[in-house]
Image 1 (tube, helix red, strand yellow):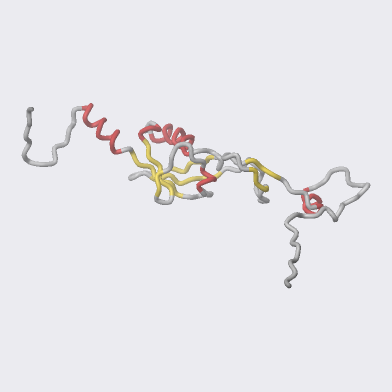
Image 2 (cartoon, one colour; image 1 turned 45 degrees about the vertical axis):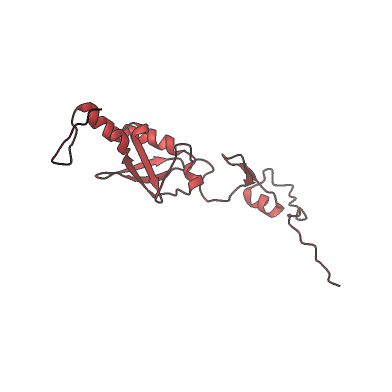
Length: 157
């Protein structure tokens, strides 16, 4: 017969920090006492808060946004969405947010996706392209239609 061991999957509060001189509990005391801090992610998931050296929620990341001919350095919060990044880029480039296509790690990103959820870090590169469909519509409305072939035929039905 086999014996199974009981495994502990929780932290016990057996270490109690008691000090009459200390009036405030510091972060190192909280680690010793086994206190767990929680945070609510944008997707609604409750997870254990990460320990990081940066300030909580006040961090700013710098992105390199490259177009075909230009490179822009944009400072933004990591919890922002790609839609918010498009609004900032609209002020810098002059392209409307609906005319922009943002690519990160080879995939086009939707406006509702958050930067930190996709994995965007400080000094990462994001590619900015103008939407080809809207670009064609602009050319057609301005009257500058570019004909690729040498022969042009009109078909009437």
